[in-house]
Image (cartoon, rainbow, N blue to C red):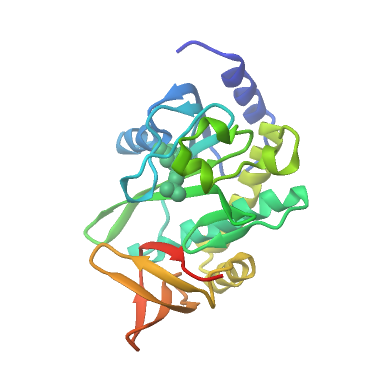
Length: 265
Ligand code: BTN
């Protein structure tokens, strides 16, 4: 693999990075998707704390099989995790990651918010997305690929029209370029802190911090799950991070996963 300034700088960053969680870092100039690459490594037995990072992606994966547009300027990484938990608890990993991302953005004196389950928004536009892919065999979590995409120094004009209209980037919000590796350091430290809390099963602390950063509770929403479409008011999230919805049909529903759209401010 050819060494480029991005790869060189990232490997140097990692050499000087004191963090007891990230064990290996593999950096690329351009790959189809860091989640796909991390999955290949996990299948070959790569250890927890292996980090795949790339300057751009050709076919970044978003939730619900959407494309995650990944031009140069964004931050695209995937971490291999091997949590000792039941499959129903893995939703909490995506929630805690959204808290870590949101807190990292807020270092820049901004107030980002989380839309359930894990979209990070700034001024009501999407700035980061999280894609969690779990390998579960016989109800045991073998590994989890945690993918994080952040519009850091992204020129949103490079995004397709539909995506651009609902997206923003950190550099565009604060009007100057963001130091990529400074952001990365803070992000990994914040993630490490919350992942430790998760491993200690202190789920209530994750839920509490997620609720503090979230603006979904109390909203009227439309939720698309794999099997149905629901409209209702969000009442709360439970200890597994599942959404509790009072539907317009007068029922209370627990949503484990789905696409959430606000229909009223
Ligand atoms: C979403 O749809 O909101 C989730 C987007 C997740 C994108 C990230 S970018 C790094 C990692 N690699 C991928 O292919 N996807 C995730």
